[in-house]
Length: 117
Image (cartoon, rainbow, N blue to C red):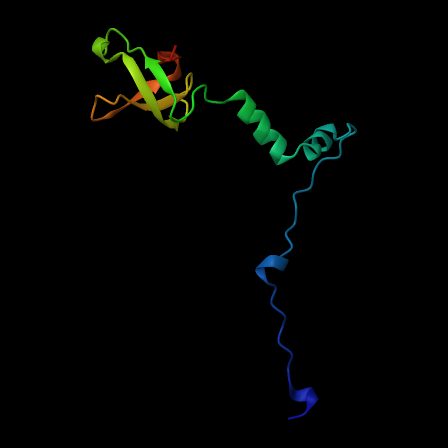
C-alpha cells in the first residue's frame, strides 16, 4: 500500500469542541450597562445577600413557645424544641418542633413561635 492509496478519515468534532452559531443581535446605540453590572456581581455576594434577607429567626435545638390557633388545637400551646428548619410557605418560615411530652413532631410557622423567656 502506498501513501496515495490511503484515504484520510475526516476528523470528528468532540462534544467539547462543538462551535455553535449564536443568534445575531440587533445593534443598539445604548451602552450595555446591565451586562457590565451583572459581570461584577459574584455568586458569593448574591448568596450572602439572600441569606441576610431570608434567615430563620430560630435555630435547631432552641426552646420556643408555640402558640396554636384557637381553631385548630388550643391545647397544643406550650414549650417546644426546634428539631428542623423548613423552607418558607410564602409568608413565614416553617419549623419542625417537638414537645418532650408528645410522641410526635409538629410543623409550626415562625409567626406562631416566640423566644422562651
